[in-house]
Length: 277
Ligand code: DO4
Ligand code: MG
View 1 (cartoon, rainbow, N blue to C red):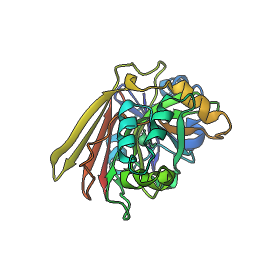
View 2 (cartoon, protein in one colour):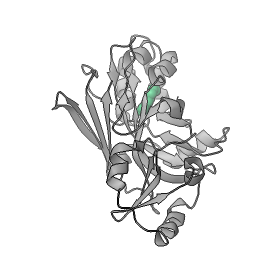
View 3 (tube, rainbow, N blue to C red):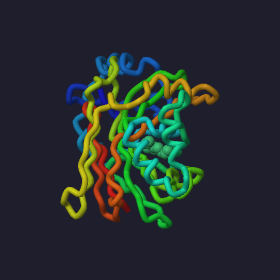
């Protein structure tokens, strides 16, 4: 089942039929029994006929007033890329240490106001010359710490800024339109299969500039572990979103350019498409 946020209401897709739920996003999504409740709702509702219209003209990022948090260095590729980019600044060891440590790296990524949805533009910072998208499976977590659903996240990152000094991480990660999520929240009553693939393709002037995929079972940590640390000393009254880290980083000679198209696909969820402003 898929849940879309639109300016006309919340759209529920089940078996290629769409249903409209007129409800506030925060109330709707912060529900430990979301999947079962929505199945019941669908049984007593009539399907819509203008869903294609809503999806092409009125789609919003799947977020209300939730915060977006992110996990770092959860895949080997992220560890090695970060060690490499920060070696001149003497920061390399930190990434190796955090990869092995009990405590994961968790950082604040974005508020709803700095976040865009599928089909919208992400930004690269004007004061940065080395920028990449990071494709990340993103968890929708309820206020009680349960995974309510899954979406696709793009953790846009300025590699020269974080490489200059790890203390600059918040500036490398958080700025206007630095986070993209969508296109929907995928609900399921069982965990995602271990062989679920994340695929990122970057197109420049219509031609493929970069393409790679990774399976989610290449992650070093369990989702439950990331959630446990995130919720240790913080409450999230309407739930939150948590990006789970990237296992795909383009080579060091790659940087994003204005107009690039970033396509991130995760099995069962769909494709998040963004253009660089
Ligand atoms: O430690 C820097 C950021 C790590 C990150 O965003 C990732 O691994 O996805
Ligand atoms: Mg990341």
